[in-house]
Length: 136
Image (cartoon, rainbow, N blue to C red; front, side, top):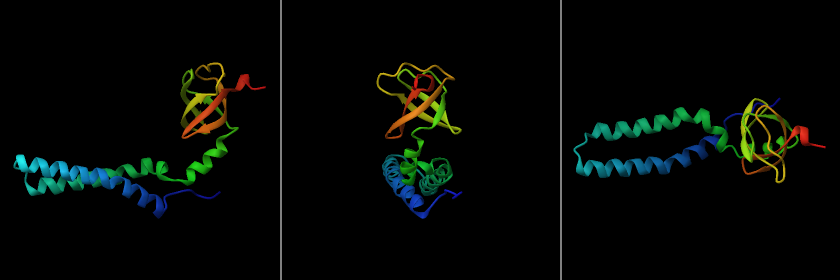
């Protein structure tokens, strides 16, 4: 089985998405320094802390920056899962040990917590499901 992990493209994408917040933080700190006497070390220390925060969060969020995940989501169609809360019309389901946001297919009856569901489609990052007992 091919191991999926971080690539330089994912790291670059994540880094580029973090730059605007870092620039905004720098501007805010610069403006505050004009009105409050903040030491130089505070400015640079806070900037460093912000970068460290982004580095620490990366292992938890990198999948959101992986475009190959979008293609693999198509493989979710037809998979079975379990409703983790009442779906009426949306909620969370568990498929292969992962929690997913899900919506019921149009016209599908509500699904209670713990009932089986089947993935019928995908809209963005939301799985479109139908109760498994309702499938003919």
